[in-house]
Length: 466
Ligand code: HEM
Image (cartoon, rainbow, N blue to C red):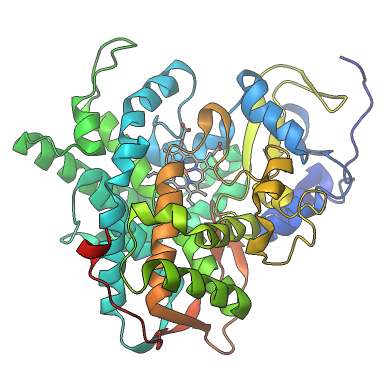
């Protein structure tokens, strides 16, 4: 340990530092940005006595790498994940240590690149079906439309189910989780305490949990009863025995928590990235022109396949740039297991560590003119010089998003399929603002005028092109 100096940080304006809590819950993005102004390590204290909590914001990619990769054993998910455990118990997302490693090993084969490639057709089929369900021109909330689309895709791909019967019930249940999710920004113990008081948010959460649990249980029971191997994640989890570990399989209850995790983690993040894509494109006609030029020349009106993706570099750049400006997972936290030194400062054991994609993605040291939507910045040369963890929408290290290859493929295929057939204009007067909850949502949704693209395109049958 080289130094005992204190890192910079804001003075508490209100007793127990509750001003930091207010600022984090009022506007999390502004709070994260403000906590990056003073330096790459910024510190403040919340609470006092036994409930005193040291909070450290680590704003440099090198420090983020230490937390997530090189020194990850000493920075664990801890109390920060307590709230999610109320819904997901011990799952791949919420557990740690050996149990997490085991769950990760069991689920990993379902996300292998080759297996994921087979989902391409499901993604484009559902996208085309979604477009067909829209009138020639209509005002639609793209937050909702994209959420429905990605939910259908993840359920079909990973559980080979259409969820037709339960669709409305599940959608209402997901709505019921929204306000509860806002508590993620509060200190976990306070958030959990609120969860024991029968206020409307808690009642809605309990109802939602019940609906989601019983839907997942039904899926599992039907699959067990059929005895059929669908070759999807659900069959894989039901049959899995941990050969490298204790050679046991998973109970129905454990499978429920895992599929509920995939169900929740696997649709809203991608839906938000797509919603922000349609918004950013609507504000940047030059980017739309380039995107259309690429799609028209490569696809000439046919539905894209996975094999087309290497030939759609601009489409990928658009998706990359959208997730830079609006990272769906905009921040995460860990706690220091023992005293740690970061950037020359001592971080005491038990401190809360905040690292934020939003902060590094908007840092002018790494992204010149950071607020500009500029897909062209993503040249191979630029990527080669970018420090690791300056851009990290999917996290990193052992807790790297398991769905990353799925999400890249889905993002590119849905942008290519939908942008080829539709134009998007923001509804005049519709306010656009972020609403950071667990993910980076839009406060007022995203009302857009969606119309069919009126360019004459040469139709090539899918079979002839694939
Ligand atoms: C654009 C889309 C997505 C984004 C931006 C995203 C982002 C992330 C991030 C940042 C983490 C790490 C969180 C942390 O370290 O605290 C994560 C973990 C995870 N994600 Fe994603 N994700 C996306 C799509 C998906 C999809 C499609 C799936 C599944 C089908 C998925 C399943 C998971 C799971 C299970 C974890 C926990 C992994 C572990 O702890 O071992 N995600 N995601």
